[in-house]
Image (cartoon, rainbow, N blue to C red; front, top):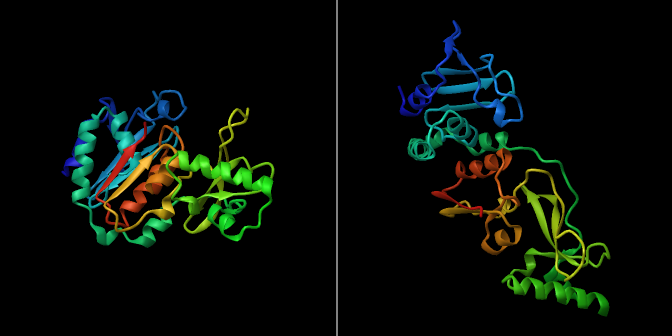
Length: 273
């Protein structure tokens, strides 16, 4: 039996039973991690087959699967952790699976089919800061605000990346530098960072779909690394991916992992501090 499948089978809960259809049922290990009460009615189960293994919970609905020649994805790694498999063992098996990936089965069409579909948003308000500087069509008062925005970005080490930020003279947003969000080339709203001092307003004002990541479209397929960070401005500075939270969620992990299947990345570097 494949080492990965064998490790999962060896760590199944002790109280279990087999069904004629090939399922092995036991108390699900996922429910209390997904907002449900702990299962005590044997509603979880795995189905091993020659090519891999599948898991399904009939209580909270959590599913995970793995097949020979594929990476161990985010959901399966979570399941393995809930079964009590150590982080070190999960990492070791993940690297082993990566070394066995059959790239001929992981086409770009497959990846695009698996990607989440986000609710559309309008384009980021205003226009790029470089555009404002180049055309000169701005009032004196608004120029002072624009200059303050540039000063803030310069203080964050982003003075050479003004083309990646928007600014608008709309009174509701002119005290913010705006970062446009896109997904597969389509506009998906923005996040605006307040740059004025002493204002009793939220630091970030955002309008983009839930669970999105920033920077997906800016990643280069020939890059050796994908850097994943928490902060939006850090991502802009490093051409990284930002999850805009201190934890990565399932949808974001799916987006990031999809890139490893259509690029030459050899490593994902997580800088979630």
